[in-house]
Image (cartoon, helix red, strand yellow):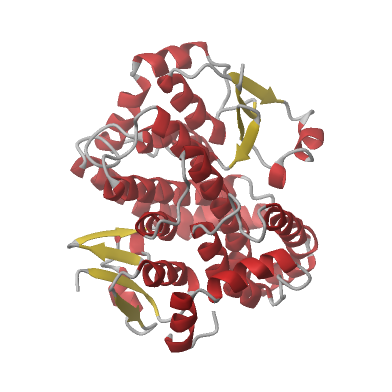
Length: 203
Length: 203
């Protein structure tokens, strides 16, 4: 098989790529690295990071870049350059808040973590972003961009669960349009099937 | 004028867009917000952020998404989808290390900042990234991707100065291939002229 995706044995940043590959009907090897294997594998990764995507013997990292590439195969991109700009922009915005929440979760300094939990991240930043994301999903009729299904919806659906888990909050509660985005992606036949058969993990 | 770029009165994340617009020959209004104006302007910005790009009355934020869009006008993109993936991936990698350095610079907790200065960021992460970026520039004959001039070079050249300023290190010293990328972009006639006439700022 010439297409391979190498990532940890959880959903994380790999799941949007698994969704997109499944939706696109690309036959790929879903390689999962355990935490035991990771220190050794890490040294072989460009910039020590996964996911790693391989096609016809060529490899590349960076999850959003890979997602955009697979989205072109899946015809989940814009109809013109401006639409692609709108899709790219909302993906980067979702990624901004995802990064903030992920950094909080993996903060190892207990005092600093407590400060963040009680401070601006939870009191201001998260509500600020999700209020605006909900409005954007509403304006786009239950999609993240351009009023129809694009890879921005796949990205949001795939990282939404991780953001919930990492923040300890149900971020989609009382946000029906964001919930609609997630439901719509998860109910696509290819994704529904994947969710049934995929390895179980917390995030 | 129908094209407008709104950003702070410094280079930062706006400069790669100014470079690309200049190179593309797009006539645009270079709107600069002072720190005094910013609190008021911030409330009108989607997600409270700049740069904001406007074209034909439509606006969008997110610097990398905008850069990719202008790069298409400037013909600084890949020849096929895989080349675009390689360009996108290196841009995201440069952005990763830029973010880490920028977060350090703007850290307000003095003790935490000192820890970072003496810890893994400066001892491991920065050398690790720049050694690999230098190798990539070498493999690509003095370009960041696909062996010829693309918007990845513009992005690297534009944020390189900011990374130097924020880290307090000349990150391109003894890295001739990265220096070549920066020099090449800065010596393009449109960019050379812009550098001569642009407002002066530290980063």
